[in-house]
Length: 80
Image (cartoon, rainbow, N blue to C red; front, side, top):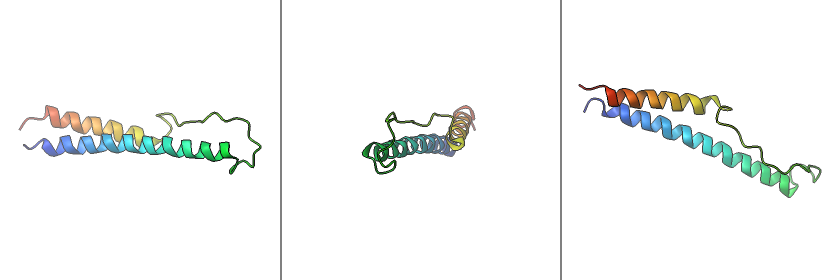
């Protein structure tokens, strides 16, 4: 039972990493919608392809994922 908090904390870190990445993609989609509608570019932009952030663009997404995996693995391996 001692390693249960490590599993929960690791899962929280991994879920928060995915949540941050999802929010980033949603904001990119909303930003692209503003450009397509002409509100942000005054109708001058002809490039309507959305530019989504890659997985490595945000430091915290990768950091939280790695920390979450390490803590979760420690909770699985550690037997008291």
